[in-house]
Length: 305
Image 1: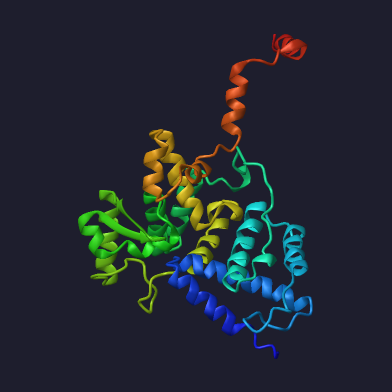
Image 2 (image 1 turned 30 degrees about the vertical axis):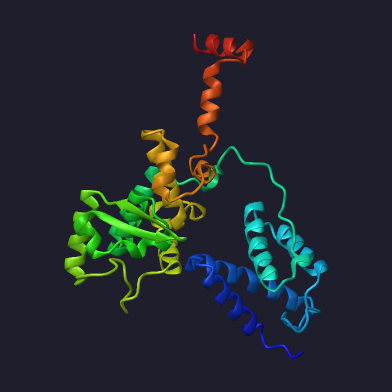
């Protein structure tokens, strides 16, 4: 069978995902992961596309080899498992159940990676940097996500109409929820809409009138890092959603309410967002006073005297 770039198979898989009512973001992620796998196959010398006629191009050995290559490349276990889930969905669609691979076993994390935790102070520096460089749209996008906790894919539901009611009706992943907008945010965005001539529809659009997408925002955010003095690893849209979750939970320790606000079906997902970085735990353990101060502390006191 002649190599045709797997276009037909990917198109059929995409249509299957659409019929399954997957969100556009999920569909793009699945397709991106499957393309990564197919590129890996090409490096392994595989040219025959998968399809109802035959599956000689894909073997269990090759799906396992891809899994191992992802681990060797340094991907986090959660990322590897996410990519394997995309591949398994693709394989199951073609009835190739025996070629599916098991996810990595991993212990549940109890602390968040401190190097990727965006603090409120760092967030404010990013907003300030956006304003100082004339990136008003970006500044308002940062403030909108951080003050509502919406996903980047849900930004299109922040419309000129929603500003008048202070409520955005968000439909994502087959679920609908109401997101409340603060008065201050609405006033800022209404003034922005007047100045930009936006009478209706999404507030955040490109020059062509299309809603801004993930890649646009990601790139613009990264450009703020140097001026704001924030590590690039901390600066990505989803971290603003995490910041909202942590700040909300610190003020009102109601995880069920937070899950509703974030649009989570499971509280277990919400727990990931409010995970401690370890600093709070360290301070708590130190307060417990279960490590005997010993001679070192006594000597420090003598030195001060």
